[in-house]
Length: 405
Ligand SMILES: [Zn+2]
Image (cartoon, rainbow, N blue to C red; front, side, top):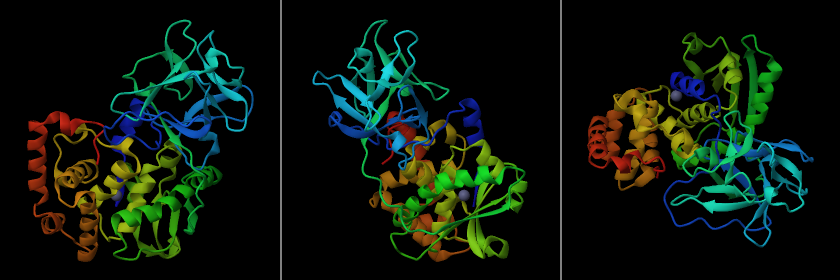
Protein backbone atom coordinates (compact mmCIF):
# COMPACT_ATOMS: atom_id res chain seq x y z
CA UNK A 1 0.00 0.00 0.00
CA UNK A 2 2.92 2.28 -0.12
CA UNK A 3 5.15 4.03 -2.55
CA UNK A 4 8.76 3.25 -2.00
CA UNK A 5 10.60 6.13 -3.48
CA UNK A 6 14.17 4.97 -3.50
CA UNK A 7 14.12 4.66 -7.27
CA UNK A 8 12.31 7.98 -7.67
CA UNK A 9 14.88 9.65 -5.48
CA UNK A 10 17.69 8.38 -7.63
CA UNK A 11 16.01 9.67 -10.74
CA UNK A 12 15.51 13.04 -9.18
CA UNK A 13 19.12 13.23 -8.10
CA UNK A 14 20.31 12.32 -11.56
CA UNK A 15 18.19 15.01 -13.21
CA UNK A 16 16.35 17.42 -10.98
CA UNK A 17 13.82 17.99 -13.72
CA UNK A 18 11.45 15.05 -13.70
CA UNK A 19 8.10 16.53 -14.62
CA UNK A 20 4.61 15.35 -15.05
CA UNK A 21 3.98 14.83 -18.71
CA UNK A 22 0.99 15.04 -20.92
CA UNK A 23 -0.22 13.10 -23.92
CA UNK A 24 2.51 11.10 -25.54
CA UNK A 25 3.13 8.89 -28.49
CA UNK A 26 2.09 5.35 -27.82
CA UNK A 27 2.90 3.55 -31.03
CA UNK A 28 4.47 3.94 -34.39
CA UNK A 29 2.13 5.36 -36.97
CA UNK A 30 1.90 7.38 -40.14
CA UNK A 31 3.18 10.94 -40.28
CA UNK A 32 1.48 13.28 -37.87
CA UNK A 33 -0.71 15.87 -39.62
CA UNK A 34 0.29 19.50 -39.25
CA UNK A 35 -1.61 21.46 -36.64
CA UNK A 36 -4.62 23.46 -37.69
CA UNK A 37 -3.43 26.97 -38.44
CA UNK A 38 -4.87 29.39 -35.90
CA UNK A 39 -5.69 26.55 -33.52
CA UNK A 40 -4.81 26.42 -29.85
CA UNK A 41 -2.44 23.66 -28.79
CA UNK A 42 -0.61 22.27 -25.81
CA UNK A 43 3.07 21.68 -26.51
CA UNK A 44 4.65 18.97 -24.41
CA UNK A 45 8.26 17.89 -24.22
CA UNK A 46 9.53 14.35 -24.69
CA UNK A 47 11.94 15.18 -21.88
CA UNK A 48 8.92 15.85 -19.60
CA UNK A 49 6.56 18.71 -18.90
CA UNK A 50 4.79 21.23 -21.09
CA UNK A 51 5.64 24.62 -22.57
CA UNK A 52 4.23 27.39 -20.39
CA UNK A 53 4.18 31.18 -20.58
CA UNK A 54 4.82 33.24 -17.45
CA UNK A 55 2.34 36.02 -18.11
CA UNK A 56 0.34 37.41 -21.05
CA UNK A 57 2.85 40.24 -21.45
CA UNK A 58 5.57 41.41 -23.80
CA UNK A 59 8.80 39.69 -22.82
CA UNK A 60 7.07 36.89 -20.95
CA UNK A 61 9.27 33.95 -20.03
CA UNK A 62 8.72 30.64 -21.82
CA UNK A 63 9.46 27.68 -19.61
CA UNK A 64 8.69 24.02 -19.12
CA UNK A 65 6.43 23.08 -16.23
CA UNK A 66 4.44 20.10 -15.05
CA UNK A 67 1.76 19.21 -17.56
CA UNK A 68 -1.53 20.55 -16.23
CA UNK A 69 -4.60 20.48 -18.42
CA UNK A 70 -6.29 23.10 -16.24
CA UNK A 71 -3.73 25.78 -17.04
CA UNK A 72 -4.47 28.18 -19.87
CA UNK A 73 -0.79 29.20 -19.48
CA UNK A 74 0.01 25.93 -21.23
CA UNK A 75 -1.99 26.79 -24.34
CA UNK A 76 -0.51 28.38 -27.46
CA UNK A 77 -2.05 29.65 -30.65
CA UNK A 78 -0.07 28.32 -33.61
CA UNK A 79 -0.45 29.96 -37.00
CA UNK A 80 1.10 29.19 -40.39
CA UNK A 81 2.00 32.43 -42.19
CA UNK A 82 1.27 30.67 -45.48
CA UNK A 83 4.83 29.57 -46.20
CA UNK A 84 5.15 26.78 -43.64
CA UNK A 85 6.61 29.08 -41.02
CA UNK A 86 4.62 29.19 -37.84
CA UNK A 87 4.16 31.67 -35.06
CA UNK A 88 3.54 30.32 -31.56
CA UNK A 89 1.63 32.95 -29.60
CA UNK A 90 0.17 33.40 -26.17
CA UNK A 91 -3.57 33.09 -26.93
CA UNK A 92 -5.43 36.34 -27.53
CA UNK A 93 -2.17 38.32 -27.61
CA UNK A 94 0.39 39.28 -30.24
CA UNK A 95 3.30 37.90 -28.19
CA UNK A 96 5.07 35.04 -29.91
CA UNK A 97 7.87 32.63 -29.02
CA UNK A 98 10.92 34.56 -30.19
CA UNK A 99 14.56 33.56 -30.52
CA UNK A 100 17.07 36.20 -29.45
CA UNK A 101 19.68 36.14 -32.21
CA UNK A 102 22.32 37.41 -29.80
CA UNK A 103 22.28 34.69 -27.17
CA UNK A 104 19.71 32.20 -28.50
CA UNK A 105 17.46 32.64 -25.47
CA UNK A 106 13.73 32.34 -26.02
CA UNK A 107 10.87 34.47 -24.69
CA UNK A 108 7.49 35.78 -25.89
CA UNK A 109 7.81 39.13 -27.68
CA UNK A 110 5.63 41.36 -29.81
CA UNK A 111 5.22 39.59 -33.16
CA UNK A 112 6.31 41.48 -36.26
CA UNK A 113 6.71 38.46 -38.58
CA UNK A 114 10.49 38.30 -38.33
CA UNK A 115 12.09 34.92 -39.14
CA UNK A 116 13.53 34.66 -35.64
CA UNK A 117 9.91 34.71 -34.40
CA UNK A 118 8.88 31.85 -36.67
CA UNK A 119 9.35 28.12 -36.56
CA UNK A 120 8.97 25.37 -39.11
CA UNK A 121 7.73 22.01 -37.99
CA UNK A 122 9.50 18.79 -38.82
CA UNK A 123 7.69 15.60 -37.87
CA UNK A 124 9.98 12.88 -36.52
CA UNK A 125 9.71 9.55 -38.28
CA UNK A 126 7.44 7.01 -36.61
CA UNK A 127 6.50 9.47 -33.92
CA UNK A 128 3.93 12.08 -33.02
CA UNK A 129 6.82 14.34 -32.11
CA UNK A 130 8.01 17.48 -33.89
CA UNK A 131 11.22 19.43 -34.05
CA UNK A 132 10.57 23.18 -34.04
CA UNK A 133 13.25 24.71 -36.25
CA UNK A 134 13.78 28.43 -36.02
CA UNK A 135 13.14 30.01 -39.41
CA UNK A 136 16.10 32.35 -39.03
CA UNK A 137 19.11 30.22 -39.95
CA UNK A 138 21.78 32.71 -39.00
CA UNK A 139 24.26 30.93 -36.77
CA UNK A 140 23.09 27.56 -38.11
CA UNK A 141 19.95 25.44 -37.87
CA UNK A 142 18.57 25.78 -34.34
CA UNK A 143 15.59 24.16 -32.67
CA UNK A 144 13.42 24.98 -29.69
CA UNK A 145 15.03 23.17 -26.77
CA UNK A 146 14.00 22.37 -23.23
CA UNK A 147 16.96 23.20 -20.97
CA UNK A 148 17.85 21.16 -17.93
CA UNK A 149 16.90 24.11 -15.70
CA UNK A 150 13.45 24.06 -17.39
CA UNK A 151 14.07 27.23 -19.31
CA UNK A 152 13.97 27.17 -23.10
CA UNK A 153 16.45 28.21 -25.78
CA UNK A 154 17.35 27.70 -29.43
CA UNK A 155 20.12 25.11 -29.74
CA UNK A 156 21.70 23.30 -32.72
CA UNK A 157 19.12 20.81 -33.93
CA UNK A 158 19.50 17.18 -32.98
CA UNK A 159 16.54 15.01 -33.89
CA UNK A 160 17.62 12.36 -31.37
CA UNK A 161 17.44 14.72 -28.41
CA UNK A 162 14.16 14.36 -26.45
CA UNK A 163 14.69 17.93 -25.18
CA UNK A 164 13.99 19.07 -28.76
CA UNK A 165 11.05 16.76 -29.39
CA UNK A 166 7.59 18.18 -28.79
CA UNK A 167 4.04 16.95 -29.13
CA UNK A 168 1.33 19.34 -30.23
CA UNK A 169 -2.06 18.40 -28.85
CA UNK A 170 -5.16 20.37 -29.69
CA UNK A 171 -6.40 22.13 -26.57
CA UNK A 172 -9.99 21.32 -25.94
CA UNK A 173 -12.25 23.50 -23.87
CA UNK A 174 -11.52 22.90 -20.20
CA UNK A 175 -13.73 20.10 -19.02
CA UNK A 176 -15.90 20.79 -16.00
CA UNK A 177 -14.36 19.37 -12.85
CA UNK A 178 -16.13 16.15 -11.90
CA UNK A 179 -18.17 16.42 -8.78
CA UNK A 180 -15.95 14.29 -6.56
CA UNK A 181 -15.75 15.59 -2.99
CA UNK A 182 -12.13 15.96 -1.98
CA UNK A 183 -11.18 16.88 1.56
CA UNK A 184 -7.84 17.77 3.08
CA UNK A 185 -6.69 17.21 6.63
CA UNK A 186 -3.58 18.68 8.19
CA UNK A 187 -2.84 16.23 10.99
CA UNK A 188 0.93 16.71 11.21
CA UNK A 189 2.73 19.07 8.84
CA UNK A 190 6.12 17.71 9.88
CA UNK A 191 7.52 21.17 10.48
CA UNK A 192 6.61 22.48 7.01
CA UNK A 193 4.44 25.51 6.35
CA UNK A 194 0.84 24.24 6.24
CA UNK A 195 0.03 26.96 3.68
CA UNK A 196 2.62 25.58 1.26
CA UNK A 197 1.27 22.09 1.74
CA UNK A 198 -2.30 23.29 1.22
CA UNK A 199 -1.42 25.16 -1.94
CA UNK A 200 0.27 22.07 -3.40
CA UNK A 201 -2.88 20.12 -2.65
CA UNK A 202 -5.09 22.83 -4.18
CA UNK A 203 -3.04 22.76 -7.37
CA UNK A 204 -3.40 19.02 -7.71
CA UNK A 205 -6.84 18.18 -6.42
CA UNK A 206 -8.38 18.66 -9.88
CA UNK A 207 -6.17 15.84 -11.14
CA UNK A 208 -7.47 13.58 -8.39
CA UNK A 209 -11.07 14.42 -9.20
CA UNK A 210 -10.52 13.87 -12.89
CA UNK A 211 -8.60 10.63 -12.46
CA UNK A 212 -10.91 9.04 -9.92
CA UNK A 213 -13.59 8.16 -12.47
CA UNK A 214 -10.99 7.13 -15.03
CA UNK A 215 -9.24 4.78 -12.64
CA UNK A 216 -12.58 3.26 -11.62
CA UNK A 217 -13.52 2.66 -15.23
CA UNK A 218 -10.13 1.13 -15.99
CA UNK A 219 -9.72 -0.99 -12.87
CA UNK A 220 -13.28 -2.11 -12.07
CA UNK A 221 -15.47 -1.47 -15.11
CA UNK A 222 -18.20 -0.83 -12.55
CA UNK A 223 -17.97 -4.29 -10.99
CA UNK A 224 -18.17 -2.82 -7.49
CA UNK A 225 -18.77 0.52 -5.86
CA UNK A 226 -15.99 2.62 -4.44
CA UNK A 227 -16.37 5.34 -1.86
CA UNK A 228 -17.62 8.59 -3.36
CA UNK A 229 -15.02 10.97 -1.94
CA UNK A 230 -11.29 11.30 -1.50
CA UNK A 231 -9.71 12.27 1.82
CA UNK A 232 -6.11 13.41 1.66
CA UNK A 233 -4.14 13.77 4.88
CA UNK A 234 -0.78 15.29 5.64
CA UNK A 235 0.48 13.26 8.56
CA UNK A 236 4.23 13.16 9.10
CA UNK A 237 3.54 10.91 12.07
CA UNK A 238 1.87 8.06 10.18
CA UNK A 239 3.39 4.72 11.18
CA UNK A 240 4.43 3.93 7.63
CA UNK A 241 6.69 6.97 7.54
CA UNK A 242 8.95 5.45 10.19
CA UNK A 243 10.39 3.85 7.10
CA UNK A 244 12.26 6.76 5.49
CA UNK A 245 11.67 5.33 2.01
CA UNK A 246 7.91 5.72 2.08
CA UNK A 247 6.49 8.80 0.35
CA UNK A 248 2.76 8.20 0.54
CA UNK A 249 0.42 5.49 1.68
CA UNK A 250 -3.18 4.47 1.30
CA UNK A 251 -4.61 3.89 4.77
CA UNK A 252 -7.22 1.18 4.35
CA UNK A 253 -8.54 1.53 7.89
CA UNK A 254 -11.08 4.25 8.63
CA UNK A 255 -9.54 5.88 11.69
CA UNK A 256 -11.09 8.63 13.82
CA UNK A 257 -8.17 11.01 13.23
CA UNK A 258 -8.72 10.61 9.50
CA UNK A 259 -12.42 11.59 9.47
CA UNK A 260 -13.27 7.89 9.82
CA UNK A 261 -12.46 7.49 6.17
CA UNK A 262 -10.04 5.36 4.24
CA UNK A 263 -7.51 8.00 3.26
CA UNK A 264 -4.48 8.88 1.21
CA UNK A 265 -1.72 9.88 3.61
CA UNK A 266 1.09 12.10 2.35
CA UNK A 267 4.51 12.65 3.88
CA UNK A 268 4.93 16.45 3.99
CA UNK A 269 8.68 16.40 3.38
CA UNK A 270 8.28 14.26 0.28
CA UNK A 271 5.66 16.56 -1.20
CA UNK A 272 7.73 19.66 -0.54
CA UNK A 273 10.88 18.10 -1.99
CA UNK A 274 9.17 16.50 -5.00
CA UNK A 275 6.37 18.91 -5.94
CA UNK A 276 6.23 17.55 -9.50
CA UNK A 277 5.56 13.96 -8.48
CA UNK A 278 1.84 13.61 -9.10
CA UNK A 279 2.35 9.95 -9.94
CA UNK A 280 2.56 8.91 -6.32
CA UNK A 281 -0.90 10.42 -5.72
CA UNK A 282 -2.23 8.48 -8.70
CA UNK A 283 -0.70 5.28 -7.35
CA UNK A 284 -2.39 5.75 -3.97
CA UNK A 285 -5.67 6.71 -5.59
CA UNK A 286 -5.51 3.46 -7.54
CA UNK A 287 -5.21 1.63 -4.21
CA UNK A 288 -8.36 3.41 -3.08
CA UNK A 289 -10.15 2.09 -6.17
CA UNK A 290 -8.73 -1.40 -5.61
CA UNK A 291 -10.23 -1.16 -2.13
CA UNK A 292 -8.06 -4.00 -0.94
CA UNK A 293 -7.12 -4.44 2.65
CA UNK A 294 -3.55 -5.42 1.97
CA UNK A 295 -0.85 -4.38 -0.43
CA UNK A 296 0.20 -7.59 -2.06
CA UNK A 297 2.67 -7.52 -4.92
CA UNK A 298 -0.08 -7.80 -7.51
CA UNK A 299 -1.88 -4.76 -6.11
CA UNK A 300 1.35 -2.79 -6.10
CA UNK A 301 2.09 -3.83 -9.65
CA UNK A 302 -1.39 -2.83 -10.80
CA UNK A 303 -1.21 0.53 -9.06
CA UNK A 304 2.10 1.20 -10.78
CA UNK A 305 0.69 -0.09 -14.08
CA UNK A 306 -2.06 2.51 -13.95
CA UNK A 307 0.38 5.18 -12.91
CA UNK A 308 3.09 4.43 -15.46
CA UNK A 309 1.36 2.81 -18.42
CA UNK A 310 -1.97 4.60 -18.38
CA UNK A 311 -1.63 7.93 -16.57
CA UNK A 312 1.91 8.92 -17.51
CA UNK A 313 3.74 6.80 -20.04
CA UNK A 314 6.93 8.72 -19.46
CA UNK A 315 7.27 6.99 -16.11
CA UNK A 316 7.35 3.55 -17.72
CA UNK A 317 10.20 1.48 -16.29
CA UNK A 318 12.94 0.45 -18.66
CA UNK A 319 14.35 -3.04 -18.90
CA UNK A 320 17.36 -2.04 -16.83
CA UNK A 321 15.04 -1.20 -13.94
CA UNK A 322 13.62 -4.71 -13.77
CA UNK A 323 16.56 -6.86 -14.76
CA UNK A 324 17.61 -9.06 -11.86
CA UNK A 325 14.31 -8.56 -10.01
CA UNK A 326 11.36 -10.87 -9.57
CA UNK A 327 7.82 -10.88 -10.86
CA UNK A 328 6.51 -10.48 -7.34
CA UNK A 329 8.56 -7.43 -6.37
CA UNK A 330 5.50 -5.30 -7.07
CA UNK A 331 5.95 -1.78 -8.46
CA UNK A 332 8.07 -1.57 -11.63
CA UNK A 333 8.73 -5.29 -11.96
CA UNK A 334 5.14 -6.41 -11.72
CA UNK A 335 3.88 -3.45 -13.76
CA UNK A 336 6.32 -4.34 -16.53
CA UNK A 337 5.11 -7.93 -16.50
CA UNK A 338 1.46 -6.84 -16.51
CA UNK A 339 2.20 -4.85 -19.64
CA UNK A 340 3.62 -8.02 -21.17
CA UNK A 341 0.57 -10.01 -20.14
CA UNK A 342 -1.72 -7.35 -21.61
CA UNK A 343 0.06 -7.86 -24.94
CA UNK A 344 -0.03 -11.63 -24.90
CA UNK A 345 -3.43 -12.36 -23.43
CA UNK A 346 -6.48 -12.46 -25.73
CA UNK A 347 -8.29 -10.01 -23.43
CA UNK A 348 -5.65 -7.38 -24.09
CA UNK A 349 -5.37 -4.59 -21.57
CA UNK A 350 -8.75 -5.38 -20.06
CA UNK A 351 -7.06 -8.37 -18.45
CA UNK A 352 -5.85 -5.86 -15.85
CA UNK A 353 -9.46 -5.15 -14.87
CA UNK A 354 -10.27 -8.85 -14.67
CA UNK A 355 -7.28 -9.39 -12.39
CA UNK A 356 -8.25 -6.47 -10.17
CA UNK A 357 -11.84 -7.62 -9.80
CA UNK A 358 -10.66 -11.10 -8.88
CA UNK A 359 -8.28 -9.75 -6.23
CA UNK A 360 -11.14 -7.67 -4.82
CA UNK A 361 -13.42 -10.70 -4.83
CA UNK A 362 -10.90 -12.82 -2.93
CA UNK A 363 -10.31 -10.01 -0.44
CA UNK A 364 -7.75 -10.00 2.31
CA UNK A 365 -4.97 -12.46 1.72
CA UNK A 366 -5.66 -12.80 -1.99
CA UNK A 367 -2.82 -14.81 -3.45
CA UNK A 368 -1.37 -13.09 -6.52
CA UNK A 369 -0.26 -16.27 -8.22
CA UNK A 370 -3.60 -17.94 -7.67
CA UNK A 371 -5.38 -14.92 -9.11
CA UNK A 372 -3.13 -14.77 -12.16
CA UNK A 373 -3.56 -18.47 -12.77
CA UNK A 374 -7.32 -18.23 -12.44
CA UNK A 375 -7.61 -15.29 -14.83
CA UNK A 376 -4.79 -15.92 -17.31
CA UNK A 377 -4.00 -19.62 -17.00
CA UNK A 378 -0.40 -18.97 -15.92
CA UNK A 379 1.27 -18.10 -12.65
CA UNK A 380 3.46 -15.06 -12.16
CA UNK A 381 6.61 -17.15 -12.42
CA UNK A 382 5.46 -18.68 -15.71
CA UNK A 383 4.68 -15.26 -17.20
CA UNK A 384 8.00 -13.90 -15.97
CA UNK A 385 9.92 -16.78 -17.57
CA UNK A 386 8.00 -16.41 -20.83
CA UNK A 387 8.64 -12.68 -20.83
CA UNK A 388 12.40 -13.01 -20.41
CA UNK A 389 12.53 -15.66 -23.10
CA UNK A 390 10.76 -13.25 -25.45
CA UNK A 391 13.04 -10.42 -24.45
CA UNK A 392 16.04 -12.55 -25.32
CA UNK A 393 14.53 -13.74 -28.58
CA UNK A 394 13.37 -10.33 -29.84
CA UNK A 395 15.04 -7.68 -27.71
CA UNK A 396 14.18 -4.76 -29.99
CA UNK A 397 10.49 -5.43 -29.60
CA UNK A 398 10.56 -5.61 -25.86
CA UNK A 399 12.91 -2.74 -25.24
CA UNK A 400 11.18 -0.26 -27.53
CA UNK A 401 10.50 2.78 -25.34
CA UNK A 402 7.44 3.68 -27.41
CA UNK A 403 5.88 0.35 -26.58
CA UNK A 404 2.93 0.20 -24.32
CA UNK A 405 -0.23 -0.89 -25.62
ZN1 LIG B 1 1.26 1.02 -3.28
